[in-house]
Length: 588
Image (cartoon, rainbow, N blue to C red; front, side):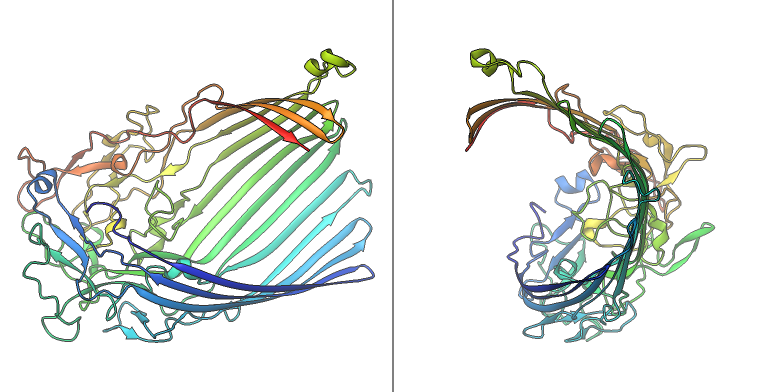
């Protein structure tokens, strides 16, 4: 495959919105009533996989044009055009109640729902449950999970000493995530009978469809039917929502300083995740959970049989994932006085989930697809965006020189300002994986093929060396028994920390009462510190199949692997090198 197999695409979203809010003040109450509506027209032209995705087991196979499999949209059976229609309605009421002079309540309730998407020409196809013997054509696409989406909100502000120098603030709210076009951009256009995709083992090269019957009906039509690959939505969806809560204490200090200490947290429930649902049959292999069926005589890996034999791979969207976030926060700020203003904030947090995105391109440090559709907790780990420590400080200082000067001396000496932004944070997590499918689970979602190895006895699941040329030690991992899932968790390794200093100085020239010229000199990453990213996808692979173009192979009926020689190599930075720029700004 060359280029992006998801292209070409030509999608248009027309979003018509209206909203209105009524304010009513009565005594100690400040009431607000509101409504909102959206009408979405998502006109889609998606030809994903029209060019096919070929997989080669080793470099020698690639060089000799010997693919092991190909996934492709069947020529002549591709209908990429859809016209989805959906509406969203929301109502809310809120009361800001000044109970006492030192105590205010904020109480509110929001109700919203989204309609189940329809298609203007009835081109909807879905496998609502993995056990369904055949696809369901036409509406409804799925059940509506939003009809009871009532979201309460409550907050308070309290001055316990009635001096205006101390404030206690707290809040809680529920927020729903509706099924909008971003969730069905692919699953709405890639299923039979409108578009048919399938896989073929050991296809001819370069014409992968040579000898392939392009008119074979989709299973279960005939005994020799075509097993289609699907992108589906579970019919029995649950409402996805997150609960957010916070508590903080603010205090005014002398010298125009303020300090804030607080806690913030959230818990997400029924969040959407995506995974291969039509996996092989589960069982016990080598004393641990695995997959059973017919094994390949050469590798010992399972080759049979899917839970639903009528279809190939089924990438299904399900609403059963969870997320957890907890953070301690501290802040210090100085209002401008004597020419100085400053801010400092620090956050100590931990974010855990079972999948941080819904598309393969959402994050590049781990896969967004579950390793086991039927065990969501197997992927519970640090969020792909989790950062444990974050420190940010900034200050600006107007130099006191020449404030009383006039003429040329005043023009040169007064009006100078120095500014600085400092950022320091710990690294983001990333996932180490295998270079092949060792579990025999029959996962065929090409962009989510990821399996993790076992951790060697006594080794760390975060064997970081600190060397960007070899950030982690691949020898800490070992190949698990064939047809089982490795015991290494998701996102257990930590990437490099980030430290960055930006500096600038300004000079103001007051030309007239309403006109001013500002000279700016800005220096980004002034110390030219290299902030490395995490290893890319290829270099996060710890173990490679022990088969290479020089003839090394595994014993008959076994799989084996060796450490990837490029494991842990970091090839990119996440901040720029030192950059300096100058500018003039004229204000009138």
